[in-house]
Image (cartoon, rainbow, N blue to C red; front, side, top):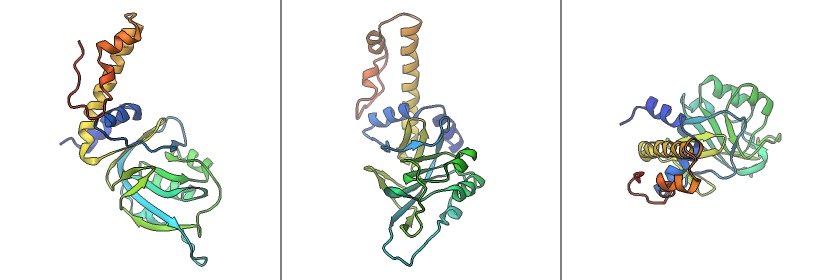
Length: 228
């Protein structure tokens, strides 16, 4: 069993594109559609702490989020705010608290605010955008650390979340090492293809055939293809 430190280091050397290809070959999708990072150059990897919210029908109810106190160091917060884009569920105070607790980042099925504060703290937020209207009184907490479904992708507590400039992918905890090994292989194959094209002058089609590239992302790939 790979240590959490080695698992983290391994994934952080990759891109979500390579991990997505690896997931695809196992028959998984795992990609969260429409969710993008707030700041280029930031990456996250860690187990999910899930937060699910629902619409609020009680005009007398107004809640400020305090779940942050329960999130362990090193985790990634995943908030399902129903994809709402006209009110927020994350802002500057939560960001400062998360940064202080060394939380890896936040993924939101929805939007956040206080963008300048979040950027100044160099804290990774992956979301559907930015909006200024508070979520207080509009949505309310439904549950913590229960499975959530975002755009057809189910995220269980402690599933692994990996995000970079391409977006976010969810890695089933039990497949983490296999996905990593295959993603590393895909990364190496792609580098070899670049070498064959750039330094040896091969046509791209020939280089891909040599490295059996097209087989790598086939769904339900049983064994890794061996280049000629």
